[in-house]
Length: 364
Image (tube, rainbow, N blue to C red; front, side, top):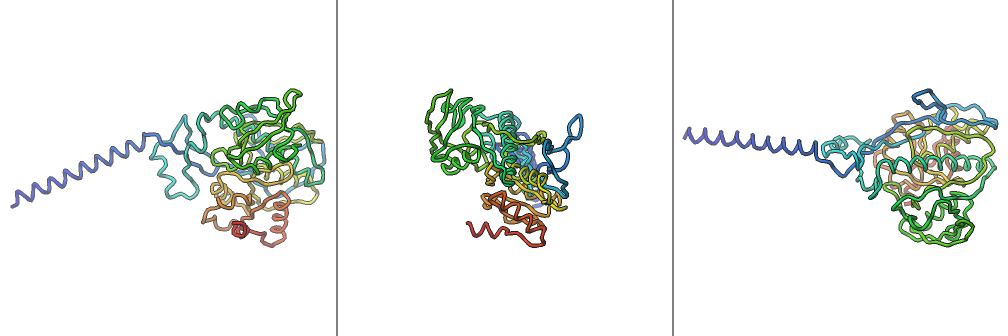
């Protein structure tokens, strides 16, 4: 009987060794086998009134010359999202485990960030161009808020291969109208794209080398960004009556538009806007002052909280992306326009609470 007991114990011990070997093999595979996912986490938080470090020097984030500016205090923060993982450098499955217990990080399919045929370099180049466009729109929006609106022509600079406008629009095309809207700036064009929606059809009237043409495109949302896009880079030919330079290094994309507009408005008005408070904002903006949705809302909320933000301004179009658990102590105000954003800051500085996430519930 004892001999049988010894054999049974040996069998159990052998089973544990087998189980341990299986676990080791699975762990080794998880640590080396590439996954089709990326991780989003809070990126750098940059004060628009601060400086940006380069290899050579500390440069101001926003420089304004050729017009009168006024002192500011406090901070108007630019938020960003850092992405780990790309088609060229995919994350292993085991790397995703760190997101399980960390609410600041999210797992996102690579296909949502890098549509088929789009490399990390393509995404970086597109985001750099979107940032340049955002700077121009923010300047126009700030001037419009001050009663000095700008208008101009929207011209196609390049067409992204495989994008919605590939084979339809060409470099140098001037977009005269979109749907039933005349296009004198990016605001009218983006409004028309929003009306058409991702996957819808949009008629464009264009000038191509002096010939008037009508083409039809189907705008598409790009990855986790819900904004319908044409898949082109464009420029607006407008004359800004003073010099504006905005530098953010590797941070790209259009989501700092609202922040730029608020900072420029603060610099160009005698009365301070931030008034010593730490304000964080995110959202695209057009030259008419409309605030549009962006991606990475949870990460930007946590980034704002870690930076000691007093008031966080969120595009009202991103209400559905607000997580159930918002960082404690963070006042969140959804806004639809630059005017609403300024009003929310003024309300907060007056000691009152601006309309908050109840606006999301009312618009649901």
